[in-house]
Image (tube, rainbow, N blue to C red; front, side):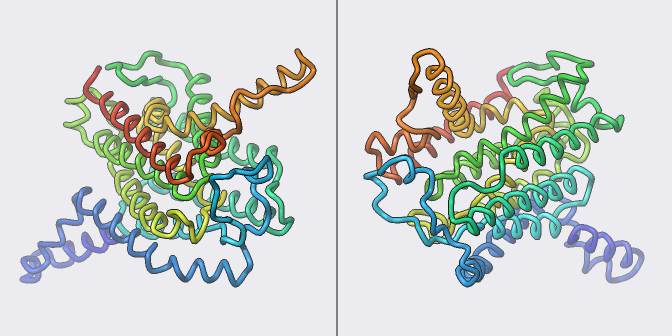
Length: 382
């Protein structure tokens, strides 16, 4: 919005003495300036709305008064501070700050609108899931069939939309891998549609599974968001993308503004979500943030970079899949189900081993930073 307003004022002042005074407005044409503005705006909005949203959620009694999955499966001796009563659905704060800052500072091209609208859809799905948990006072919200159905419809719809239009069809038909200069496969429509859809759905659920400790999911999301801030800026710049042999995607530079807004909103939320948390993001935030990362990875033609950058999310999701799969398989083979981990997702396994919650979170941050460095190194190691 600010970009369009600045351009309108400059156009109206053309050929008048006002042009000289309004010339500083040209800074709004720079993505770097607007990205910084989006990050600061989202951070300030989060700080301003945070106490109000928390108080509002408490008034509505949208708190976690039920036993969560971690406590339900057994006593976690390291969980000293009870989490019952802490308001959830705090993801509305993140999504509000992200969308406000994104719409205010970005140019509204189809990539930006696709991302922000998808975030709203997934936030709505997560809000409904959180609401079901609160009204039923248990940790079982809406059914997995409904959640996965909405996610696959959204992911498949985005993949299909990109494939239909000639200027974005290469995002689907050409399979790009990290550390390779050229696409490893071309003309792969079906494979491309599957990869794009699974990237969005998988990322959304992986972040959701990671959201189990104070500050864990949002902190790891911030790290991955920074990686994609760099990647989207490069993908949207003709000269830099050509130099680094990265696929150029027209308009992708504006996703840098969205990433910056996500970072600002995430930092603002972390202010209230750090241990001991004053609010939880709930599925409202985790499904939306994970989906946003998956969508942006697809839009800049780097879905497999997300697997590297989001290594913590991948490990969390795999721990659940492996635990569930091995339990069912071993029950069929041996008559009793066996476990690979003390508890899944992975962060609860380490809690069971005696790590304090803050230790798990900090160490996962460190692993997330290492994954981010490897992901960014793919820009040069080709």
